[in-house]
Image (cartoon, rainbow, N blue to C red; front, side):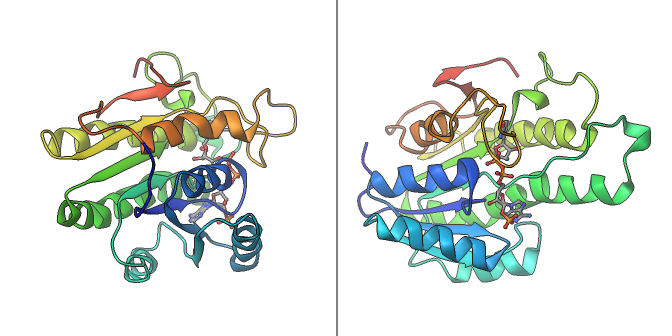
Length: 232
Ligand SMILES: NC(=O)c1ccc[n+]([C@@H]2O[C@H](COP(=O)([O-])OP(=O)(O)OC[C@H]3O[C@@H](n4cnc5c(N)ncnc54)[C@H](OP(=O)(O)O)[C@@H]3O)[C@@H](O)[C@H]2O)c1
């Protein structure tokens, strides 16, 4: 479906996968509000997409900061139809007992508290418009099925939590025209994924864009990779 007339918010849109998701949603017709913490990098990213003729805005905010999320919601250009919780951080590849408490707190805040704050703010706006798509960007590293293998404890636990947040929220919205899904982009060449990753940002962003443009009555409360459902 196209997103003509829709308003989308993409977190972590200043680089990497989120930047490509913002591009894809804008190409699909949405007006896209791009979010990241570093204002200069965010503005450069916005200007680049605007230079491609896309309808993009920018708002610098830390998604884990409740007051900043309030300000961000107030800056939305007239409602919200699509939310993509993509912003994320990863902790070092150490075991649980070697992880500094501050690193745990930072990762859980960005990867789980942030999406909670944004979902909490987005649902009333989407209900008011009678339509919504929420896409959470998770990772196979958070899958109970095959991802909780040790190391990066805050990252893996935050993504397992994000999966749970998604399934729980989808159940709360069952029967309503707001679809909530979570996806794994695969291992992607970004600042986080590193130069040796096998996937491009286009490949990483594809399933998020697919889920943000699901037709009415589409699936909700599922975990996806490569446009296919995967085990939790
Ligand atoms: N790359 C991979 O291989 C891979 C694999 C599986 C899942 N993922 C997931 O995909 C998502 C995007 O990853 P990526 O590789 O594109 O990461 P990235 O290149 O490191 O980019 C992360 C983006 O998130 C923003 N960000 C981080 N913390 C934030 C916060 N608290 N508030 C607002 N913005 C914040 C960053 O901007 P600022 O630093 O300016 O805030 C940046 O725009 C993440 O959720 C990640 O866990 C990635």
